Length: 331
Image (cartoon, rainbow, N blue to C red):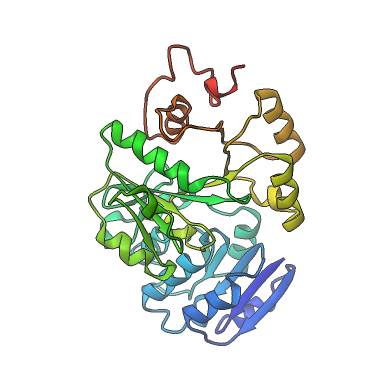
């Protein structure tokens, strides 16, 4: 089911033949739109840009890309030279909004074939963008050179906080500078690391703008809706029967929603056969399977994981990694 927010494009959008769960008309501030829909489940948001108060100020579009899931937004733009120019679209793309159009046919296409960064990369003019995070060729956003990765727990206590700490240590041991940020929580302080900081959701973009001298930024998103600032978001799932059953009771469509996203099994004791069965039953793919790790020691399984993310280029141990999952599945 989809959401429509309309203003000047109301007449055109009224002819759109799609399933609608909620429709809102008129002009609203970016904050009001985020407040209305941040905890509201929907498949896609068809958003008439003229329904955003002061929409000519791109910072208001940026507030939406941070407060809501940018992947779900289809932005309906006025059909004029300003809003269809490469310079303007570059700014929209830099916020993680890859679906935009001026007509009904474009909306229908974006609903059926949602764009990824690769689909719109040819539009982007990198030099025309100032402070916003910019996707690179692999889809990972870059802020003055830093690749930004987000982490979210799907199951309760799936381990994002400790995993980020261990990833940070592993990367720094390989000469890579790393900043870790947690949103709306205060767990990082217990690691006594000056480059692991806490920030409120509404201050994340300002914090990123001031932290420019890092190769990698790891964001513990927790329950915030700041996915749009990250080029890659890793969804962590602890695959115990108890945790999975709790997750499915909360949201029976969770694996359907994970299609096309990076699902990571963390603190997992599953074998390769178990993972194959898990993928078959859930009708989705697992990006990586991470076993329980000791945060006091160097952990070889992290090497394979960071290789898969393109952050390292090292062999795991003395044996061949055996593909994507590598030695994690050796018995």
